[in-house]
Image 1 (tube, rainbow, N blue to C red):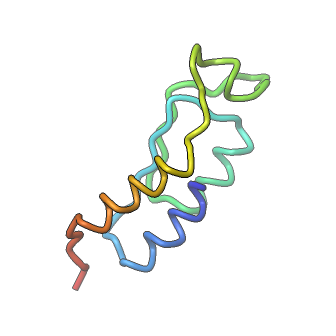
Image 2 (cartoon, rainbow, N blue to C red):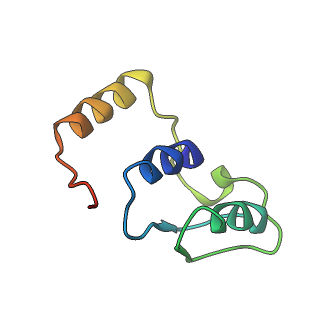
Length: 82
């Protein structure tokens, strides 16, 4: 989902792309580093057992929530880079 979002974002020619995440595997960080100007991660464990291990509540996002977020995003005016 993040990689697809970055793909779409790059079409808007942003000045800079910064990815920030509280936790990620080394492999994920390596993959993301190619897509961002700056990458911030507060915790990258030596052995990564999956994201759900590090959260008390990691419920999936529903389709309805995604549609709601996308509808809100459509209302947001993002200036185009000239």
